[in-house]
Length: 92
Image 1 (cartoon, one colour):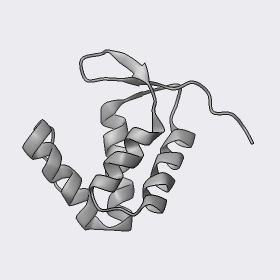
Image 2 (image 1 turned 120 degrees about the horizontal axis):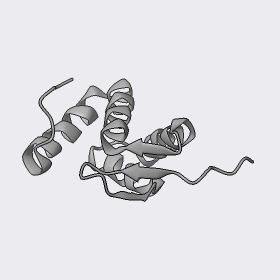
Image 3 (image 1 turned 60 degrees about the horizontal axis):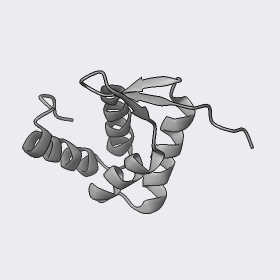
């Protein structure tokens, strides 16, 4: 099995932190996605991501994958972000 290269997430304020796949899993679970789907989404993003990835790229990729599986899950994510983080203007 191939080891994943070290990946860095570039935050909105340009801080950098390590890519932690479990953060994606937990976020997907909070939308109602089952564990297997949440892990599949996180694995796919980890495999496709470059050495550095922005939080907005992560967000868009996860939203796209959630929407493919169940549009309600992506709506829940957006609703959370709008209410708590106030990040989204576009709805799926």
